[in-house]
Image (cartoon, rainbow, N blue to C red; front, top):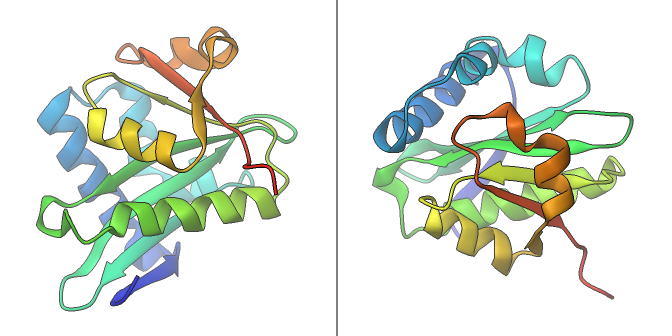
Length: 161
């Protein structure tokens, strides 16, 4: 996408991870203890244990979105804490970021790659479906209890090539 770039996690960008996610979570729900733990300690909770945090930068707007891959098992990864600032909606920054994160998850051999969400996040769920995530009862059973607000669980299914 023109004007969009991906950045790797750095401690200098960590405040964006907190701010962007706190913005959307507080707008739709309330920050849970498990959210705060991850948002306040992204290096310790995501990066150091083998996960990834990416940021998307839009020309003229700076960092407008972020997303994490949290390692939850030997090869399992949760796509989590994905948010895009309202100021950047419509620029396809979320789609650009999600495509980059799926590619990274595939490089890491993620199986399963899954996410937990809430039906109120309809635009995000539509994007996840568009890029290959499917609703999955097994993921809900295995991982869904982690968040009080979780009522959607999805698993990535790579398109047949």
